[in-house]
Length: 494
Image (tube, one colour):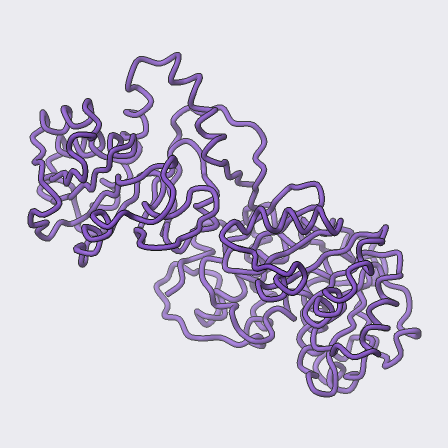
């Protein structure tokens, strides 16, 4: 499990080290880690370090000092280095002295950048907020083909929310110093590959966590020696309508695929559901559906009075309920249906549905927005996005960074609902079921985009997918995760 720490938490962890270590020692630790990653990147891209050229974009904060120290270390390995000082009078004095002593060249933003093999972004650190200033943005715009390695975070991206509201760096690699920050998950599209270097910080429990492949694989329910179809969890699905039968098919199919228990379907699409998943016990009458350990309700079921009555009936049950899609639209009009529940409820909105529920868009701080709704309504919440944010009523957050946006396709949410609902039926708590299910869902989307196969580092091309192809790759996704595979399973979007 990976923890993400806010800028304030990181600064608090740095304070005792700064007080106990010699002046500049902590910065040199970070710089050594940065230089090591940059050297490895140069070797991977160009075949070596000596004789290669790097350009360092230097701001006025400590990140500029980190970058200057790192560049001085790379100079000693034979790389040619130029430091572009955005504010020369505020450049980190010791770092700049070390850089010039190592033979580094200092340049102004107006000077010719040339064609470096790699650029180090040391413009803004975790204390910075807002987009790049015009002079920094203009400098970054002049970088044409060189990959950028960002020190701690891409400049212009908010460290705590990952939000971007103007010009920002898009890095090929980001080197995180001492701890992962929320930006590394919430702003992953700008971070590229994230490399964490240890600088000796002592950190407590993180308020934001992400499950690794091994965590997901260990949590995934599989039949034991004494299990039968009932003991592994029975999930009920209320989804689909005459206009949207596919929602019922996709949601129910995902529930069937995700676990080995039993799936009951209640709705008007029994023929379509059984044609695709004959193992499902299907009925058009909710009252005849039978006992379940969790319900999934809402995908494609409509928003008329009959749908409202169905939603009310499901929410009056004493088992965990996942509410998605049309169910969320109905809840926006009658939130007391969930506020008064004693059993757990999981809501799974995208940004538009979140705005319907609350009257306002999630905004740049999606974690704070998810926490607030979960606490206010006493529900668990899965806020969809490339970085899916999952909030418990007590404030704990899981995040799943999908590694791409291949699942942004019609019907993919129906698949996710079926996966998570089946995990809840197997006895996994709603927030953890959401985190586990979201991980498998996003990996299935990546596998589908690459045409299948567990090895996602083999250089295969990518192609758009549909919800059906995502569902078809779900079993392979679960197999990969149960094998504990972590490297390369979430490649960047192509």
